[in-house]
Structures are given as C-alpha cells and as structure tokens.
Length: 280
Image 1 (cartoon, one colour):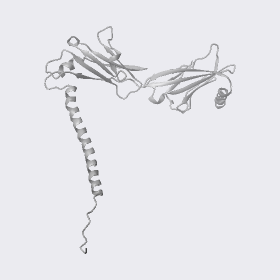
Image 2 (cartoon, one colour; image 1 turned 180 degrees about the horizontal axis):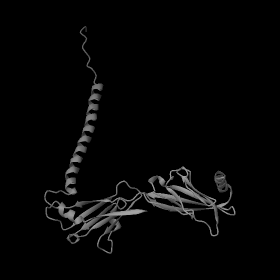
Image 3 (cartoon, helix red, strand yellow; image 1 turned 120 degrees about the vertical axis):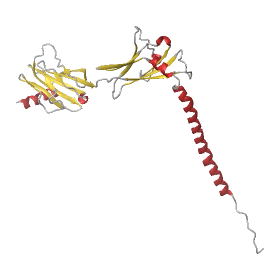
Image 4 (cartoon, one colour; image 1 turned 90 degrees about the vertical axis):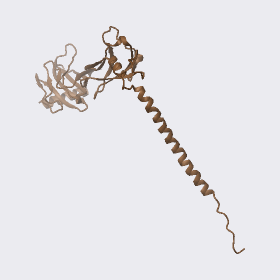
C-alpha cells in the first residue's frame, strides 16, 4: 500500500497542476539545516514526499496516513529527521550535501503543491594568515614614514571575501585605492604617530567568519635595524643580475647560430681552384 501511494504521488506530480516555489538555504559543515515545507493557507496535508533531485535523485522521507518515515536508502540515511510540521532536518552536514531538494504535498482534496529548495553547504572559515611587507630606505635609522603592504590569506577555502578594519577608530579609514587582489592586499602609509595602530583582516563566507590582527609599525621598526634588508634592497641586487643573465643568453643565441651559419655558407660557396694539367 505504501509503494502504491508513492507511485500515486509521483504520478500526481507529473500530471496534475501544481505550484512550484523556490528558495535557497545555507548550511555549515558539521552543523544542521532545516528545509521548511511551506504550504498555502488552508492546505490540509494528507501525504508528503521529500526527495533529493541533484546531484542524485533519491527518496529521503515520506508522510502517509499520519506516519513519518525516513529509513530510505540514500546518502542522508541516519542524518535526516522529518518533523511533525513536515519540515526536513539534515545533520550533521557534509561538504558533499549541497544540491537541490523538493517536497511534494497532497491535500485531502487531491490538490498537489511542490516546493523546490537549493542547499549550499559551506566549510567554516579558518583563521587567516596576515603577512607584513615593508618598503624602507637603506638607512639604519628608524624611518619617519613607512609604506606597508599587508597580505591576508585563508588556506583551503573557497567562496570567501576579504575586508580590512583599522582598529580603535570609528571610521575604518580603509580607502578602496589601497586594496589589491580582491581585497587580499592592503597598502597603508604609517608614521611615528601610528605606532599602536592595528589592522585586522576579516575573512568571511555566508555562514562564518574569522579574523587576524597585526600592528605593522613594529615590523617597520624591526626592518630598519642594522643588518636587515628591505625588499627594495633585494630587488636592487637581483634585478640587475637577472638582466645580465638574460642579455648574455640572448647574445649567445644570436651570435652562436648566426656565426655558424655564415661559416657554413662560406664553405658551401667556395669553388675549388683548378689544378694544372701536367700533360699540357
């Protein structure tokens, strides 16, 4: 009888007119999500069926003659719970649970109502890593101003956004012109009055966020210490050497084949001198 009811519901979904609504639901790996079965006013439910439509079509839960059932073979077996209001709860969520779901409701008059939902499961955002890159002069004395590049990175995560906050101020003071690489890199200019100013990188996705804070002036002071070189000092040495290597390679490529070709052409174009006939 249950099998016949299931086939009847699927047949109603294919043949009878019904209303389709859509909704997006977000969840976090390890957490739970509630897929709500909405219905029009006065819709008295007689039977219901929950299904996964994508990435694979599976039967998840049913309601027949007042009985709730979720023991169907699917990837959600043991993780699905059908509540008395016919909303479906999934837990704990896994990264592969994202997909499309549908619930088919039939009232006591035989009318069908179908709702589709899209579930997107996100991982928790990890603590970001902030690196400080300093541009200073070659002087050993602490600089009066310090140009700072703050780089923020969150490992092994996608669908995230980056933002920056200047701590201790009402105005965030983050100008769009100082942001690069979709907000991952922030450029700021600091002076002695900014010794205690801290910057925080906030990494977020639709379900979670985390942050890391640095005080970049400390790096400016350390960078100016004797025996430490800035990235400009490194570039002043590396770039000329690379240019010399490239020019030497181009010269060898140009003169080597060309000189060899010339010698080959001269050898091919030479005419052997005529030998004198001893009989003449």
